Length: 171
Image (cartoon, rainbow, N blue to C red; front, side, top):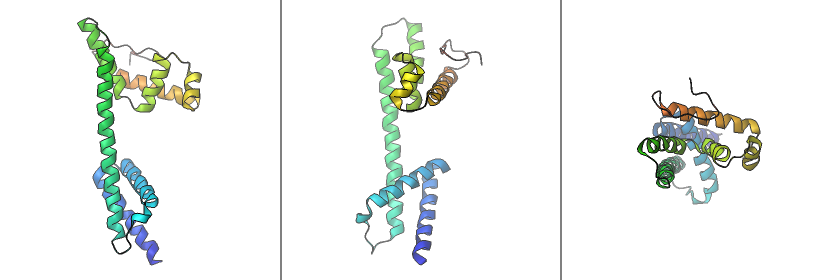
């Protein structure tokens, strides 16, 4: 029974530390889950003569730092992607600004929304074709597309002349 209490104490310590790092309960829970998975996968690296709590907290720390690095790398990729979209055209100043706005908004969308918007708007796929490609229900495609359009509209701001096809622009 003591081992069970020790594991519960370790789990509570992991959650506290993850929440301190992430400053968000849902993100912290994701970090703890990933850390537990990593601990199980690498249980051979645990040295019984050392503190299990410290070993687990080190894993929580490493998972959190790796996640932040991944987020920073994705942000850099999004910025480069937006630049790539713009570098391939030579429009007039006003058109360039509108395209920059669209490219920036598009690259900032979460990957699932960006993927659906690309498949439907750029590749010209139907909702069903996009659903087949992504292996998700058509309702998921419609929901992601709706959220992507809403995010682009919101990012465009009230004074923008950006119009998002397939949604309401008069909100």
